[in-house]
Length: 459
Ligand code: TYD
Ligand code: MG
Image 1: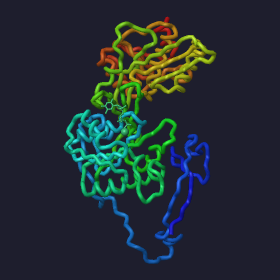
Image 2: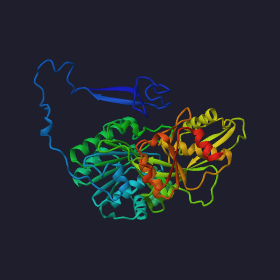
Image 3: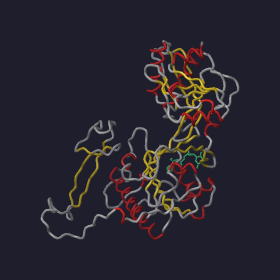
Image 4: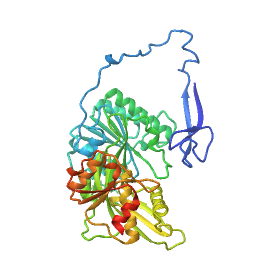
Protein backbone atom coordinates (compact mmCIF):
# COMPACT_ATOMS: atom_id res chain seq x y z
CA UNK A 1 0.00 0.00 0.00
CA UNK A 2 1.36 3.38 -0.73
CA UNK A 3 0.32 6.65 0.77
CA UNK A 4 0.26 9.79 -1.35
CA UNK A 5 0.77 13.04 0.48
CA UNK A 6 1.17 16.54 -0.84
CA UNK A 7 3.47 18.95 0.91
CA UNK A 8 5.16 22.22 0.17
CA UNK A 9 8.96 22.24 0.32
CA UNK A 10 11.24 25.26 0.44
CA UNK A 11 13.60 25.07 -2.54
CA UNK A 12 16.24 26.99 -0.68
CA UNK A 13 16.57 25.10 2.59
CA UNK A 14 14.30 22.08 2.23
CA UNK A 15 11.90 22.94 5.06
CA UNK A 16 8.43 21.39 4.72
CA UNK A 17 5.05 22.87 5.32
CA UNK A 18 1.53 21.46 4.81
CA UNK A 19 0.43 24.73 3.16
CA UNK A 20 1.98 27.31 0.91
CA UNK A 21 3.81 30.15 2.64
CA UNK A 22 5.23 33.29 1.07
CA UNK A 23 8.25 33.56 3.31
CA UNK A 24 10.08 30.50 4.53
CA UNK A 25 10.03 30.57 8.36
CA UNK A 26 13.18 28.46 8.40
CA UNK A 27 15.59 30.31 6.09
CA UNK A 28 13.74 33.58 5.55
CA UNK A 29 13.75 33.36 1.72
CA UNK A 30 10.69 34.63 -0.16
CA UNK A 31 8.61 32.71 -2.65
CA UNK A 32 10.56 29.47 -2.48
CA UNK A 33 7.79 27.01 -1.56
CA UNK A 34 6.92 24.44 -4.22
CA UNK A 35 4.30 21.75 -4.11
CA UNK A 36 5.66 18.21 -4.11
CA UNK A 37 4.00 14.82 -4.05
CA UNK A 38 5.47 12.50 -1.49
CA UNK A 39 4.85 8.83 -2.01
CA UNK A 40 5.53 6.50 0.82
CA UNK A 41 5.42 2.74 0.62
CA UNK A 42 4.03 1.64 3.96
CA UNK A 43 3.61 -2.08 3.21
CA UNK A 44 7.14 -2.99 4.23
CA UNK A 45 7.19 -0.88 7.34
CA UNK A 46 6.86 -2.53 10.72
CA UNK A 47 4.25 -1.06 13.01
CA UNK A 48 4.79 1.27 15.90
CA UNK A 49 6.69 -0.25 18.85
CA UNK A 50 7.65 -3.29 16.76
CA UNK A 51 10.93 -3.48 18.63
CA UNK A 52 9.02 -4.21 21.86
CA UNK A 53 7.17 -7.29 20.78
CA UNK A 54 10.25 -9.46 20.45
CA UNK A 55 8.91 -11.01 17.25
CA UNK A 56 11.62 -12.49 15.02
CA UNK A 57 12.66 -10.04 12.36
CA UNK A 58 14.97 -10.05 9.40
CA UNK A 59 18.74 -10.15 9.95
CA UNK A 60 19.79 -6.72 11.11
CA UNK A 61 23.24 -5.15 10.81
CA UNK A 62 25.27 -5.31 13.98
CA UNK A 63 27.33 -2.41 15.38
CA UNK A 64 31.04 -2.89 14.66
CA UNK A 65 33.82 -1.96 17.07
CA UNK A 66 35.92 0.85 15.65
CA UNK A 67 39.25 -1.10 15.58
CA UNK A 68 37.59 -3.85 13.53
CA UNK A 69 36.69 -1.49 10.71
CA UNK A 70 39.06 -1.65 7.76
CA UNK A 71 40.30 1.83 7.04
CA UNK A 72 40.05 2.86 3.46
CA UNK A 73 43.47 4.38 2.96
CA UNK A 74 43.64 4.11 -0.80
CA UNK A 75 45.51 7.08 -2.19
CA UNK A 76 43.53 10.02 -3.45
CA UNK A 77 43.13 10.61 -7.14
CA UNK A 78 45.49 13.52 -7.65
CA UNK A 79 44.56 15.68 -10.60
CA UNK A 80 46.84 17.89 -12.66
CA UNK A 81 44.84 20.88 -11.45
CA UNK A 82 46.64 22.11 -8.33
CA UNK A 83 43.87 24.55 -7.44
CA UNK A 84 41.27 21.78 -7.45
CA UNK A 85 43.54 19.41 -5.49
CA UNK A 86 44.04 22.05 -2.84
CA UNK A 87 40.35 22.87 -2.57
CA UNK A 88 39.50 19.18 -2.21
CA UNK A 89 42.11 18.78 0.53
CA UNK A 90 44.73 16.99 -1.57
CA UNK A 91 42.96 15.28 -4.46
CA UNK A 92 39.75 13.32 -5.04
CA UNK A 93 38.87 10.86 -2.27
CA UNK A 94 37.65 7.45 -3.50
CA UNK A 95 33.94 6.98 -2.99
CA UNK A 96 33.31 10.62 -2.28
CA UNK A 97 30.36 12.63 -3.53
CA UNK A 98 31.28 16.20 -4.46
CA UNK A 99 28.82 18.92 -5.38
CA UNK A 100 29.93 21.93 -7.42
CA UNK A 101 27.43 24.75 -7.30
CA UNK A 102 27.41 27.98 -9.23
CA UNK A 103 25.34 30.30 -11.35
CA UNK A 104 24.63 29.29 -14.95
CA UNK A 105 27.42 30.27 -17.33
CA UNK A 106 30.08 30.65 -14.70
CA UNK A 107 32.14 27.73 -16.05
CA UNK A 108 31.20 24.61 -14.08
CA UNK A 109 30.92 22.38 -17.15
CA UNK A 110 34.21 23.76 -18.47
CA UNK A 111 36.00 23.10 -15.19
CA UNK A 112 34.86 19.50 -14.93
CA UNK A 113 35.23 18.63 -18.60
CA UNK A 114 38.75 19.99 -18.35
CA UNK A 115 39.29 17.75 -15.31
CA UNK A 116 37.99 14.75 -17.26
CA UNK A 117 40.37 15.52 -20.13
CA UNK A 118 43.42 16.06 -17.95
CA UNK A 119 42.93 13.23 -15.50
CA UNK A 120 44.88 10.17 -16.46
CA UNK A 121 41.98 7.88 -15.64
CA UNK A 122 38.74 6.55 -17.07
CA UNK A 123 36.03 9.18 -16.64
CA UNK A 124 32.35 9.11 -17.55
CA UNK A 125 31.00 12.60 -18.20
CA UNK A 126 27.22 12.41 -17.99
CA UNK A 127 25.48 15.28 -19.66
CA UNK A 128 21.79 15.99 -19.46
CA UNK A 129 22.25 19.46 -20.89
CA UNK A 130 24.40 19.19 -23.98
CA UNK A 131 24.62 16.74 -26.86
CA UNK A 132 27.68 14.59 -27.56
CA UNK A 133 28.60 16.86 -30.47
CA UNK A 134 28.44 19.98 -28.35
CA UNK A 135 30.68 18.40 -25.73
CA UNK A 136 33.08 17.21 -28.40
CA UNK A 137 33.35 20.76 -29.77
CA UNK A 138 34.06 22.09 -26.32
CA UNK A 139 36.58 19.33 -25.59
CA UNK A 140 38.44 20.09 -28.84
CA UNK A 141 38.79 23.68 -27.70
CA UNK A 142 40.03 22.67 -24.26
CA UNK A 143 42.72 20.29 -25.47
CA UNK A 144 44.11 17.57 -23.22
CA UNK A 145 43.90 13.84 -23.58
CA UNK A 146 40.43 12.74 -24.71
CA UNK A 147 41.15 8.99 -25.02
CA UNK A 148 39.88 8.07 -21.55
CA UNK A 149 36.99 10.49 -21.41
CA UNK A 150 33.61 8.88 -22.14
CA UNK A 151 30.46 10.89 -22.75
CA UNK A 152 27.04 9.63 -21.73
CA UNK A 153 23.88 11.54 -22.54
CA UNK A 154 21.42 9.97 -20.15
CA UNK A 155 19.15 11.52 -17.58
CA UNK A 156 17.93 8.49 -15.67
CA UNK A 157 20.07 8.31 -12.52
CA UNK A 158 19.36 4.63 -11.88
CA UNK A 159 20.42 3.73 -15.42
CA UNK A 160 23.56 5.86 -15.10
CA UNK A 161 24.57 3.91 -12.00
CA UNK A 162 23.79 0.59 -13.69
CA UNK A 163 25.87 1.53 -16.73
CA UNK A 164 28.71 2.68 -14.50
CA UNK A 165 28.77 -0.57 -12.51
CA UNK A 166 29.59 -2.46 -15.73
CA UNK A 167 31.89 0.19 -17.11
CA UNK A 168 33.94 0.65 -13.91
CA UNK A 169 35.20 4.20 -14.45
CA UNK A 170 37.56 5.94 -12.02
CA UNK A 171 35.32 8.99 -11.82
CA UNK A 172 31.80 10.02 -12.76
CA UNK A 173 30.81 13.60 -13.50
CA UNK A 174 27.08 14.37 -13.65
CA UNK A 175 26.17 17.61 -15.41
CA UNK A 176 23.79 18.67 -13.97
CA UNK A 177 21.81 17.26 -11.02
CA UNK A 178 18.84 19.40 -12.08
CA UNK A 179 18.45 17.46 -15.34
CA UNK A 180 18.54 13.99 -13.79
CA UNK A 181 15.65 11.97 -12.44
CA UNK A 182 14.77 8.55 -11.09
CA UNK A 183 11.83 6.74 -12.73
CA UNK A 184 10.16 5.64 -9.51
CA UNK A 185 9.32 9.18 -8.43
CA UNK A 186 6.42 10.93 -10.06
CA UNK A 187 8.01 14.38 -10.18
CA UNK A 188 9.71 16.54 -12.77
CA UNK A 189 13.52 16.60 -13.15
CA UNK A 190 14.78 19.58 -11.21
CA UNK A 191 12.09 19.31 -8.56
CA UNK A 192 13.18 19.06 -4.98
CA UNK A 193 12.23 15.42 -4.49
CA UNK A 194 14.00 14.36 -7.72
CA UNK A 195 17.16 16.27 -6.87
CA UNK A 196 17.25 14.80 -3.41
CA UNK A 197 16.52 11.27 -4.63
CA UNK A 198 19.13 11.40 -7.44
CA UNK A 199 21.76 12.69 -5.05
CA UNK A 200 20.85 9.90 -2.64
CA UNK A 201 21.19 7.35 -5.45
CA UNK A 202 24.66 8.63 -6.33
CA UNK A 203 25.65 8.69 -2.70
CA UNK A 204 24.77 5.02 -2.24
CA UNK A 205 26.52 4.26 -5.53
CA UNK A 206 29.71 6.10 -4.56
CA UNK A 207 29.85 4.54 -1.10
CA UNK A 208 29.32 0.98 -2.32
CA UNK A 209 31.56 1.08 -5.42
CA UNK A 210 34.21 3.53 -4.14
CA UNK A 211 33.91 5.41 -7.42
CA UNK A 212 33.92 9.16 -6.74
CA UNK A 213 31.07 11.19 -8.21
CA UNK A 214 31.01 14.91 -9.02
CA UNK A 215 27.60 16.54 -9.26
CA UNK A 216 27.07 19.91 -10.90
CA UNK A 217 24.27 22.02 -9.45
CA UNK A 218 22.96 25.34 -10.71
CA UNK A 219 22.00 28.02 -8.29
CA UNK A 220 20.17 31.11 -9.34
CA UNK A 221 20.28 34.49 -7.71
CA UNK A 222 16.58 34.51 -6.89
CA UNK A 223 16.61 30.91 -5.68
CA UNK A 224 13.64 29.85 -7.81
CA UNK A 225 15.36 26.63 -8.84
CA UNK A 226 15.92 23.98 -6.21
CA UNK A 227 19.30 25.00 -4.91
CA UNK A 228 22.26 22.84 -3.96
CA UNK A 229 21.60 23.93 -0.39
CA UNK A 230 19.21 21.03 -0.17
CA UNK A 231 22.01 18.60 -0.86
CA UNK A 232 24.60 19.94 1.51
CA UNK A 233 24.01 17.26 4.11
CA UNK A 234 23.91 14.40 1.58
CA UNK A 235 27.21 15.09 -0.14
CA UNK A 236 30.72 14.91 1.33
CA UNK A 237 32.08 18.08 -0.19
CA UNK A 238 30.41 21.24 -1.44
CA UNK A 239 32.38 23.53 -3.70
CA UNK A 240 31.18 26.83 -5.03
CA UNK A 241 32.36 28.28 -8.30
CA UNK A 242 31.89 32.01 -8.41
CA UNK A 243 32.93 35.22 -10.07
CA UNK A 244 31.49 38.17 -11.92
CA UNK A 245 30.34 37.24 -15.41
CA UNK A 246 31.93 40.35 -16.93
CA UNK A 247 35.34 39.55 -15.47
CA UNK A 248 37.52 36.61 -16.30
CA UNK A 249 38.49 35.55 -12.79
CA UNK A 250 36.73 32.64 -11.14
CA UNK A 251 37.08 31.45 -7.58
CA UNK A 252 36.48 27.92 -6.40
CA UNK A 253 35.65 27.87 -2.69
CA UNK A 254 35.06 25.00 -0.30
CA UNK A 255 31.84 25.41 1.65
CA UNK A 256 31.95 21.98 3.25
CA UNK A 257 34.55 19.24 3.18
CA UNK A 258 34.50 15.98 5.08
CA UNK A 259 38.08 15.29 3.96
CA UNK A 260 39.86 18.59 4.40
CA UNK A 261 39.77 22.19 5.45
CA UNK A 262 37.14 24.65 4.27
CA UNK A 263 39.68 27.45 4.33
CA UNK A 264 41.04 26.73 0.89
CA UNK A 265 40.24 28.36 -2.40
CA UNK A 266 41.40 28.13 -5.99
CA UNK A 267 41.64 30.90 -8.54
CA UNK A 268 41.17 30.48 -12.27
CA UNK A 269 41.09 32.71 -15.26
CA UNK A 270 38.59 32.00 -18.04
CA UNK A 271 40.34 32.14 -21.38
CA UNK A 272 39.43 31.21 -24.93
CA UNK A 273 41.01 27.79 -24.41
CA UNK A 274 39.32 27.10 -21.07
CA UNK A 275 40.18 27.77 -17.47
CA UNK A 276 43.76 28.52 -16.53
CA UNK A 277 45.03 28.08 -12.98
CA UNK A 278 46.23 31.29 -11.39
CA UNK A 279 48.99 30.31 -9.02
CA UNK A 280 50.21 33.80 -8.31
CA UNK A 281 47.11 35.98 -7.96
CA UNK A 282 48.73 39.11 -6.54
CA UNK A 283 50.64 39.91 -9.68
CA UNK A 284 47.42 39.94 -11.69
CA UNK A 285 45.19 41.74 -9.24
CA UNK A 286 47.38 44.80 -8.90
CA UNK A 287 46.87 47.28 -11.67
CA UNK A 288 49.82 48.23 -13.66
CA UNK A 289 49.39 52.00 -13.82
CA UNK A 290 52.52 54.01 -13.26
CA UNK A 291 51.22 57.32 -11.97
CA UNK A 292 49.62 57.69 -8.55
CA UNK A 293 45.87 58.14 -8.71
CA UNK A 294 43.52 59.17 -5.96
CA UNK A 295 40.93 56.68 -4.77
CA UNK A 296 43.08 53.63 -5.14
CA UNK A 297 44.64 51.58 -2.33
CA UNK A 298 46.19 48.13 -2.17
CA UNK A 299 45.00 45.66 0.45
CA UNK A 300 47.13 42.84 1.85
CA UNK A 301 44.30 40.35 2.14
CA UNK A 302 44.11 36.69 2.53
CA UNK A 303 41.88 34.25 0.72
CA UNK A 304 41.85 30.77 2.13
CA UNK A 305 45.36 30.16 3.34
CA UNK A 306 46.95 32.33 0.67
CA UNK A 307 48.03 35.91 1.20
CA UNK A 308 47.09 38.05 -1.76
CA UNK A 309 47.57 41.69 -2.62
CA UNK A 310 44.62 43.20 -4.34
CA UNK A 311 43.77 46.68 -5.49
CA UNK A 312 40.65 48.44 -4.23
CA UNK A 313 39.27 51.49 -6.00
CA UNK A 314 36.77 54.02 -4.76
CA UNK A 315 35.06 56.90 -6.46
CA UNK A 316 33.36 59.48 -4.27
CA UNK A 317 31.47 62.25 -6.00
CA UNK A 318 28.73 64.74 -5.24
CA UNK A 319 25.33 63.05 -5.28
CA UNK A 320 23.44 63.95 -8.43
CA UNK A 321 20.07 62.77 -7.19
CA UNK A 322 18.51 63.35 -3.79
CA UNK A 323 19.44 59.94 -2.45
CA UNK A 324 23.16 59.22 -2.67
CA UNK A 325 24.02 56.07 -4.57
CA UNK A 326 26.18 53.34 -3.18
CA UNK A 327 27.50 50.55 -5.34
CA UNK A 328 30.10 47.88 -4.65
CA UNK A 329 31.63 45.17 -6.84
CA UNK A 330 33.31 42.37 -4.95
CA UNK A 331 32.47 43.79 -1.53
CA UNK A 332 29.46 43.53 0.75
CA UNK A 333 27.32 46.64 0.32
CA UNK A 334 26.19 46.59 3.94
CA UNK A 335 29.77 46.54 5.12
CA UNK A 336 30.52 49.51 2.84
CA UNK A 337 27.62 51.42 4.42
CA UNK A 338 28.99 50.55 7.83
CA UNK A 339 32.47 51.87 6.94
CA UNK A 340 30.96 55.07 5.52
CA UNK A 341 28.93 55.55 8.70
CA UNK A 342 32.07 55.11 10.81
CA UNK A 343 33.95 57.67 8.70
CA UNK A 344 31.07 60.13 8.93
CA UNK A 345 30.39 59.72 12.63
CA UNK A 346 33.90 59.21 14.02
CA UNK A 347 35.90 61.19 11.51
CA UNK A 348 33.37 63.86 10.57
CA UNK A 349 33.94 63.21 6.87
CA UNK A 350 30.99 64.27 4.67
CA UNK A 351 30.10 60.99 2.95
CA UNK A 352 26.38 61.37 3.65
CA UNK A 353 25.71 63.51 0.57
CA UNK A 354 28.09 61.74 -1.82
CA UNK A 355 27.70 58.95 -4.33
CA UNK A 356 30.14 56.17 -3.51
CA UNK A 357 31.31 53.49 -5.93
CA UNK A 358 33.66 50.76 -4.86
CA UNK A 359 35.44 48.20 -6.96
CA UNK A 360 37.71 45.31 -6.06
CA UNK A 361 40.12 44.43 -8.87
CA UNK A 362 39.17 41.46 -11.02
CA UNK A 363 35.62 41.32 -9.67
CA UNK A 364 36.83 38.99 -6.95
CA UNK A 365 34.62 38.82 -3.90
CA UNK A 366 36.67 39.30 -0.76
CA UNK A 367 35.35 38.12 2.61
CA UNK A 368 38.48 38.88 4.60
CA UNK A 369 37.76 41.68 7.13
CA UNK A 370 41.41 42.74 6.78
CA UNK A 371 40.49 44.54 3.55
CA UNK A 372 38.59 47.26 5.51
CA UNK A 373 41.58 49.51 6.04
CA UNK A 374 42.44 49.63 2.34
CA UNK A 375 38.83 50.44 1.49
CA UNK A 376 38.72 53.22 4.05
CA UNK A 377 42.00 54.61 2.68
CA UNK A 378 40.67 54.47 -0.90
CA UNK A 379 37.45 56.22 0.15
CA UNK A 380 39.22 59.07 1.95
CA UNK A 381 41.75 59.37 -0.85
CA UNK A 382 38.97 59.84 -3.39
CA UNK A 383 37.01 62.22 -1.16
CA UNK A 384 40.04 64.41 -0.52
CA UNK A 385 41.47 63.83 -3.99
CA UNK A 386 44.84 63.04 -2.47
CA UNK A 387 46.63 60.01 -3.90
CA UNK A 388 48.09 57.40 -1.60
CA UNK A 389 51.88 57.06 -1.87
CA UNK A 390 52.97 54.43 -4.34
CA UNK A 391 54.19 51.03 -3.17
CA UNK A 392 52.18 51.15 0.03
CA UNK A 393 49.53 48.71 1.17
CA UNK A 394 47.03 48.32 4.01
CA UNK A 395 45.71 45.62 6.27
CA UNK A 396 43.34 45.85 9.22
CA UNK A 397 39.75 45.46 10.26
CA UNK A 398 37.85 48.64 11.08
CA UNK A 399 35.66 48.54 14.18
CA UNK A 400 32.48 50.52 14.84
CA UNK A 401 34.22 53.10 16.99
CA UNK A 402 36.90 53.76 14.38
CA UNK A 403 39.53 51.52 15.92
CA UNK A 404 41.85 49.51 13.69
CA UNK A 405 41.76 45.89 14.77
CA UNK A 406 44.29 43.12 14.41
CA UNK A 407 43.93 40.46 11.68
CA UNK A 408 45.09 36.86 11.49
CA UNK A 409 48.23 35.53 9.74
CA UNK A 410 49.85 38.95 9.69
CA UNK A 411 53.36 37.60 9.01
CA UNK A 412 52.32 35.89 5.79
CA UNK A 413 50.64 39.08 4.61
CA UNK A 414 53.68 41.23 5.36
CA UNK A 415 55.95 38.71 3.69
CA UNK A 416 53.84 38.68 0.55
CA UNK A 417 53.83 42.50 0.39
CA UNK A 418 57.58 42.48 0.93
CA UNK A 419 58.09 39.88 -1.76
CA UNK A 420 56.10 41.92 -4.27
CA UNK A 421 58.28 44.96 -3.71
CA UNK A 422 55.99 47.11 -1.55
CA UNK A 423 57.84 49.66 0.55
CA UNK A 424 55.33 50.50 3.29
CA UNK A 425 52.57 48.57 4.99
CA UNK A 426 49.97 50.20 7.24
CA UNK A 427 48.48 47.94 9.87
CA UNK A 428 46.94 47.78 13.33
CA UNK A 429 49.23 48.37 16.29
CA UNK A 430 47.53 45.42 18.00
CA UNK A 431 49.12 43.20 15.38
CA UNK A 432 52.65 44.11 16.48
CA UNK A 433 52.60 41.91 19.56
CA UNK A 434 55.21 39.17 19.16
CA UNK A 435 56.08 40.36 15.66
CA UNK A 436 59.72 40.78 14.80
CA UNK A 437 59.47 43.85 12.58
CA UNK A 438 63.21 43.88 11.86
CA UNK A 439 62.86 40.67 9.86
CA UNK A 440 61.13 42.40 6.99
CA UNK A 441 62.61 44.81 4.49
CA UNK A 442 59.27 46.61 4.21
CA UNK A 443 58.57 49.62 6.44
CA UNK A 444 55.80 48.96 8.96
CA UNK A 445 53.49 51.78 10.09
CA UNK A 446 51.08 50.89 12.84
CA UNK A 447 47.97 52.69 14.09
CA UNK A 448 45.33 52.20 16.72
CA UNK A 449 42.67 54.53 15.29
CA UNK A 450 41.53 55.86 11.92
CA UNK A 451 42.28 59.47 12.94
CA UNK A 452 46.00 58.66 13.19
CA UNK A 453 45.95 57.14 9.70
CA UNK A 454 44.16 60.24 8.38
CA UNK A 455 46.77 62.54 9.90
CA UNK A 456 49.68 60.62 8.41
CA UNK A 457 48.28 60.19 4.91
CA UNK A 458 46.01 63.12 4.19
CA UNK A 459 47.17 66.16 6.14
P1 TYD B 1 30.09 26.74 -18.92
O1 TYD B 1 31.14 25.82 -18.46
O2 TYD B 1 29.17 26.27 -19.98
O3 TYD B 1 29.22 27.27 -17.68
P2 TYD B 1 28.22 26.46 -16.73
O4 TYD B 1 28.38 25.03 -16.97
O5 TYD B 1 28.61 26.91 -15.34
O6 TYD B 1 26.84 26.95 -17.06
O7 TYD B 1 30.86 28.06 -19.37
C1 TYD B 1 30.18 29.09 -19.91
C2 TYD B 1 31.03 30.25 -20.32
O8 TYD B 1 32.40 30.03 -20.39
C3 TYD B 1 30.58 30.65 -21.67
O9 TYD B 1 29.91 31.87 -21.54
C4 TYD B 1 31.80 30.78 -22.49
C5 TYD B 1 32.93 30.64 -21.56
N1 TYD B 1 34.03 29.83 -22.11
C6 TYD B 1 35.23 30.45 -22.43
O10 TYD B 1 35.39 31.67 -22.28
N2 TYD B 1 36.26 29.69 -22.91
C7 TYD B 1 36.14 28.35 -23.10
O11 TYD B 1 37.09 27.70 -23.54
C8 TYD B 1 34.90 27.74 -22.77
C9 TYD B 1 34.70 26.27 -22.95
C10 TYD B 1 33.87 28.51 -22.25
MG1 MG C 1 26.99 23.72 -17.90
